Image: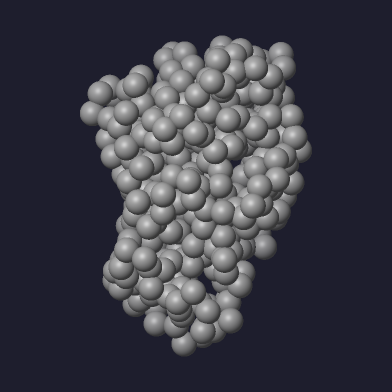
Length: 415
């Protein structure tokens, strides 16, 4: 196939993937955990000791940060930016961009839902009574755009550097906007994805007050259970996922390894409620339909769906209705990553897009972890128990966030 997209412009290839997530610090590790349905949820003593009703979360396992950052950088840069810089380094190492690549044609697009809130929380609680002693780097650590700018600074990328915040759709929004710039010739390369690290007292306490989090403290491994009849809320996670996007023809010409492409995307807003999805799923379903059309495909071309699937009753129910409407009652197989990883907020969509590409290329649909029975089973074809083998085909990846933010991506294997 040539490098022109069926609806016009350049095709957008993915040539590098880097992840730091609760299920592993590399895409293959996360993929293996996903196939096994192996939950990353664990009990944290610091949450239990804080008096919160939620004692569980999904943390990224330790890795050698000093292999990526200097000791000075580790001291100055907060955890979200560290995770993102390390994921970006892995993605760029895999992409192996040419040494003569024009840096003014390389952009950075990153999504975050929480941003620097946890760093602000640390500054407020630690220095409330002695503000004159605040660390010099407090402002850079709390700026929402700091992680994206750190990537640009570290690698000398002088193209547009933008941070997107659309709640839990932030990572997918960043990928869509990066792909749009490449399709229309504004950039040759984009380093795009999402990051969040929000397992803090204020953030966890706030979500707990909304009764959005699972309180299955005595059985962490089964706490995150998208679409399951016994779900009681999502599990907070942290992490970063970065994809290197390029013009398809340029990637092919230099012999780059191509994981697949971002073939289509769409974004809509429910305009219904600041925290709840529209129960009909109508606007989210329209977003899916628009993303598929943007890819130059029909619903019948979609091999499976990577659902947003947070493990909340209203969210899962609305998404199931949206899928049913988009596919006119003929749902393709549906999986949901968060049963394994927990909810990475702004990083969720980017991680799930990366996994969708791997699954699309290998013709595998992972099972939804902890799914036993579902009241939504009559609307969608949920994969449970074991992976399902399908023909390699495009995947629809859904991300929905507070404020009614909907972002859908179509990821296609390198056929």
